[in-house]
Length: 471
Image (cartoon, rainbow, N blue to C red; front, top):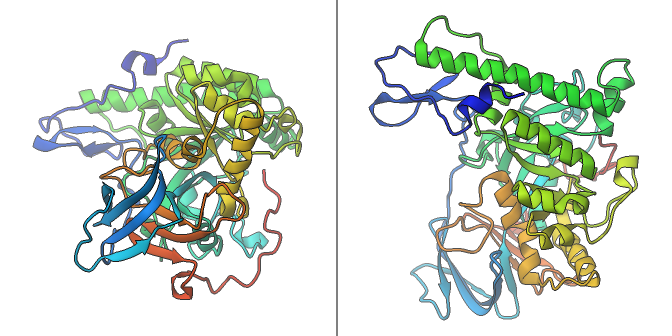
């Protein structure tokens, strides 16, 4: 079935001039001369208030750099100014007032990015009333936004910072076919979630395959109760979203009665428009293949399959469709669809030239993602692949940035990018190595040697049942 989205395509932004009278919620001004285009993503509805505030330049001298772009540079200097990486080289000149970091014997990487987190939505200490990550009231809850559940005082944020995490995506849970919108956050203190929002980062749509939706809703005697019921639910929703998108496009182009706004369809239309990225919880290889067919039918792109335990079975398809896979190093067997795993999963996907990465889905795992990457790298080497730290570091930096649509701004040590940087005591893939310092936009946010630079929360009194029950 070729629907409206096929005809119009995501590349068509309906643009008109002010000669057309426009005031609707699904529109925005877009450029000079009052041009307007459809705005299903609604980036301005809850705008980021995060501000870069680097107090002084930073010069890291003589360190080993893992750039995230496939290079390992020895005895190199790195200069951070005005929130950006401004110079990489040897024996760089120190600007006035600079903070100098002696990097001898230390390693430096880009900040770690966790593409799959529920921090703030499943905070700790964990009590029932604070469990706000899973809107299990309908198979399709595309209308909810994860950011509206984020408790910014969650002690897990500073703990993740101590593990080198500078950016993370908070997703709604996976009970539903459509779980709602995700949000990408800078790992900084914030009075409101908007103080943490990554400026300009695309929203994501959480979708879920397999056991979770059919178990939750089949158990209630409603659809979906099977995997075919799951697929029927996806397709019905995309048909409705295609009509919704077409209705708004017609209105913007031809005028007439303003269509009624629908929050859930607005999010799905944002996916069809190419403005919102799909993050799809999906374990089994054949289900990923089905989801790729659905995406092709309705002409949208899946950014990333999460929890992709069987990604190794479809690594070529992922590469062919330019779809990323977010995986664990060795979590498996906790439910049926997670059984057929291999510890070389990430390495196999990577060697197929698909976009491979680590993810946590855990308030504990997020604190040592470097060690999770180390395990995956070692498994790849045991499987016969020549994977070195300069290659594997991208699994926790540049590739998740790519999955989130922010790789033009962060994820690698390149001039002009955000100065999100981790200084390690040694090789970050050694269990003996510690995070020494973490910089976000050039500001020192964590220092292992300085208690004043170790953010703590009033609520950091102990973590009860840190893992909890996750769907």
